[in-house]
Amino acid sequence: MFRSFLSSPAFRRFLGAPAPVLIYGVLALLFAWGAVHVGWQSAGCAVCGFVSLFFIGVVAGELRYFRTARHRY
Image (cartoon, rainbow, N blue to C red; front, side, top):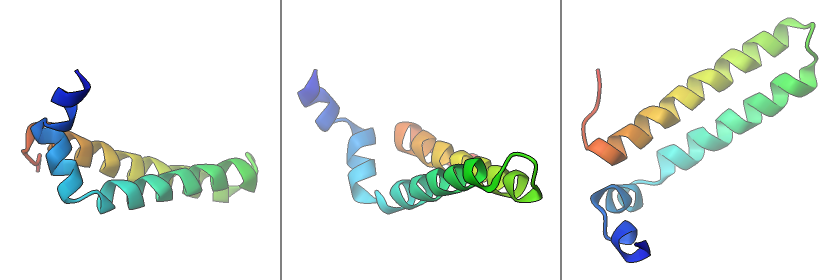
């Protein structure tokens, strides 16, 4: 099973361009951490939370591309 995962087209597409998923994933985690530490009553929490959700959506789109090899516009 592990060998079939390593030879799958999705994994090969990920190895071809891992930077967007890694960079946007780290940004999503940093903004989520910022939303928690800014304070729940402040406007900064909402901004950081929104930006974090945006980057999570970007990562989800990239992972969908790796799985299906089609972009959704």
